[in-house]
Amino acid sequence: MNKIMIVEDDKALCEELSLLLEKSGYSVRSVKDFSDVYSQMISANSDLILLDINLPKENGEVLLQKFRKKYDTPVIMLTSSAGDIDEVVSMSYGADDYITKPYNPTILLLRIAAVLKRSVKSGQLQEYKGVIVSSIKGSLVKGDQEQVLTKNEMLIFQLLLDHQGEIVSRDELMTVLWDNDEYINDNALSVNISRLRNKLADLGLQDAIETRKKQGYILI
Image (cartoon, rainbow, N blue to C red; front, side, top):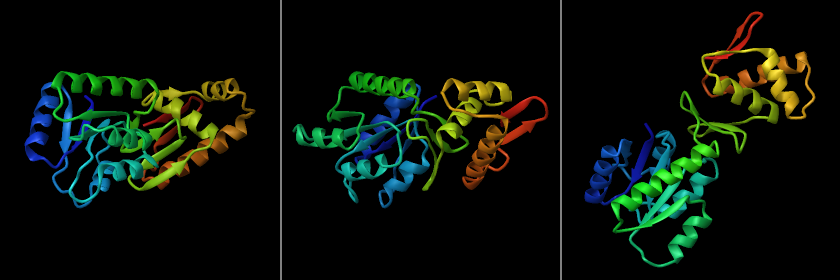
């Protein structure tokens, strides 16, 4: 079930949106306190955010610009303005789509579905125990913490994540790295695994990768 966060200060519209999305099979969270929206956008770990431009404390476009510096979560902007300026600014700041109020519910749902589909296809939407995994940026983000992975570390973690709960052999990992035209030997693989473990530990995920003797590794 995809998680959608609504950042809309119009209570009636927010409730209407929540009901529409819940009936459509989405898990919904809405912002109630607008004193620190940015922190809530980070902590929600949503699959998509519906973000109003005209907010009481901080402009939605400013929030989007700040958010997009670290996070790939899809954002659809909501506005009551019919002009082109807001749309141009929002898209230039990294919005995935733009909806003008009053919106057509069917069109809004279609737009949401399309954005989520594109995001899944591009590999943007991956999460592991509260950590946002960005294969595009090669980074792991949890709250305000970010760990940037090397190319090899990202390849290793991606394979383990794709097979979470399953043993991945050293041979499989070596093959992935070889196929990427990266020279690596058995010792280099161990070094990369060790560095990856340390970066996960820095994000509070100690012992995330288990070694299975004579079998390989498993992401638990």
